[in-house]
Length: 396
Image: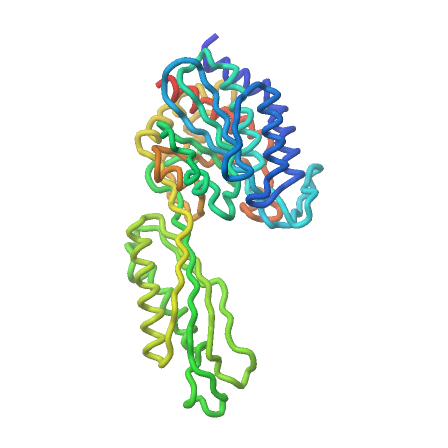
């Protein structure tokens, strides 16, 4: 029996186990940096199955290592564990038991899938060389757990490659891979406009901070259409504005919060520059002043072209779809557009050749939505993809 068939048989054999673990995690979701029960569940399974692990300095992350006993590459596989502050509104029999917390982005699948991939690769150590490291990461959603684990020494021994997957509300089985920048830099900005209070019967005595803010909002929305290359995916959104206390007084202060998304780093820097210029320029011209407080957040996920080409070559073969009523051309999108979503896997790609894949698991509801669901029949497909990618990379 060839190694691919051994792997596919193992995926089938462990399929029910993966779903069982996924449901346990889904029922007991935990927010960023609070995934202690999830981590304990994973640690218990790793210990029971004889896969050595250590606790990360960034709690409650875990790092497990599978050593083939033969010299070779070091591969990192990453799965995130945290849930979202969302009230679940599905009718699943294993819906969240924690009020106001839900796995609305599929991290329950990522964690259970990574655990099963590790089990299979551990069983098949004679079929590959080198070492594979499983990273069960906290706080992808809030807090940059990937960034913090890297700061704490995750890459003190530099791996040859990092791989990750994300279930996605799209056509079942669709593989969204792509090369180069795949998601957006996600950054925030708090804009504080300072004016001068005055009674509305004497507006000449004051400086209306709300009026300044309104002009700033209008001008900010010209950045993407007039200052950016139209071929670059970028977006700016002013999501909140607060100012004033009573209707008959000109507000002396208005505070806006905006989110900026840019796929390319050059566009990101242009947007930072123009936001500051527009805010301060308009405020000064209208007699006030303005402070801009930028928060540089998650970087764009960058799929290393060499790794992406290797995976495209692998998935174009029929092996991935062996035994399935499907063909590569039906599910592998050849050149997908970058997404404006944010993902802290981008921190991995800044350090190490990496590749991140989105896997369609049903178009029930958008990610981060209270009705988000995953078709469990396609969890095994996720396991096939990650396990096969790892196995064949270690043999390349």
